[in-house]
Image 1 (cartoon, one colour):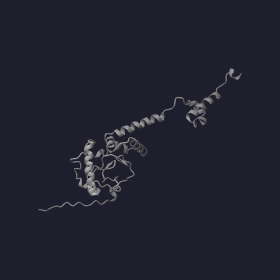
Image 2 (tube, one colour):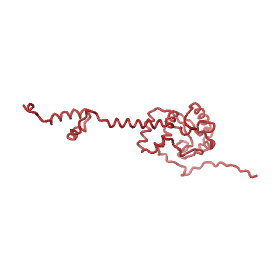
Image 3 (tube, one colour):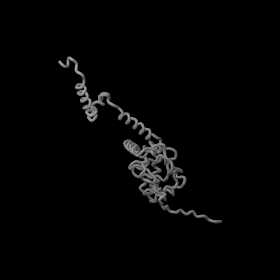
Image 4 (cartoon, helix red, strand yellow):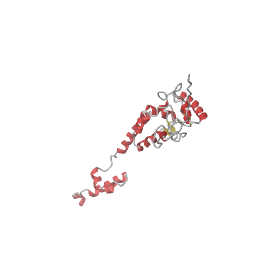
Length: 223
């Protein structure tokens, strides 16, 4: 009877394994991270997740090899756990050290058993936007003072996306609102060179003076 020996070949990065790190993603921001899609079904049970993170962070410290760490987690990475067992916690960041965005991989994807093409609904929408809008959402989520857990819940449930879209609507309303005491369109056309470059209150004052000067005089005014 032949004995088959399984040999694990160490990871050897090539050009095809490298990803472009210029792409913006919500998952890993400096000082803020999301692990919403790395849970069994949805982010829940913070205490249980934190216990698992302590165990896996200690395991990674012993391995010190992101690819070996990912491989050792096995194909059933969430078996007996609420989260993927390749996640670790450093400071306020919870992340996969084998991920190409990790500081341990230098842009190389070292993940073994991962649904690499999966994106949550929040990230799916985010990926379709122009960079300027992406940067606006990143600034918005940073203003919310999330930690790793609340940020993960917000992205996983779509709450962060809904709140940002509502914020955009409010900003558009503010930008499109015209003060009621602003000069009417006809006068703006006649005196645009004098009025439009002035601050709002000065513009209204200048408009009133111009209106008095240009209004036709009555017989009583001429006497």
